[in-house]
Amino acid sequence: MKTFSFEKLIAWQKARELAIEIFKITKHFPKDELFGMTSQMRRCSVSIASNLAEGSGRSSMKDKARFTEISFGSALELLNQVILSFDFEYIEEKKYIEIREKITEVTLLIDGLYKSQLLK
Image (cartoon, rainbow, N blue to C red; front, side, top):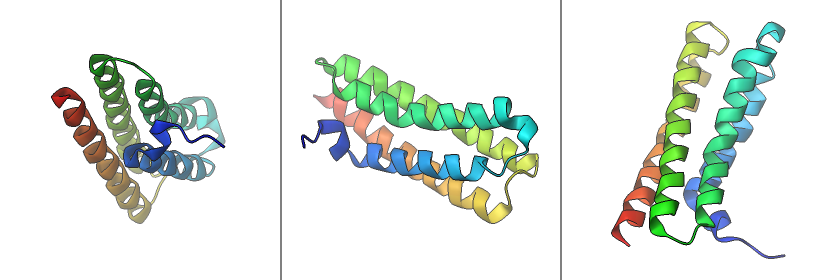
C-alpha cells in the first residue's frame, strides 16, 4: 500500500488524533447541539488534517503554505469551540485542558511546517 507524503507529517498525524478525540467527546454533547456545536467542531477538526493533506499535493511552496495557513485557522476555530463547550458545561475541566493541550501541540507543529515551507 502506498504511503502519501502527508501521512508522514507529524502535524497531520496529530491532527488526525485530535479529530478522533473531538468525534468521541462530541458524542456526549446534548442532542439539540447535533447540528450546531457538534457538527461545527467535527467539521473543523477534520478540516485541520484535510487541509494539511490537500496542501501536500500542491506543487508550489506558496500553495502548500496557503493550505497550511487554512489548517492553522481551523485549529484556532476549534480552540474557540472547545472553550465555548467548556463554558456551556458540555465538557469537564480535565477534558478541556487535555483537548486544549492537543490543539496547542497541533498548532505548534503546523506553525513549524508553515515556516519551513516559506524557507524553501
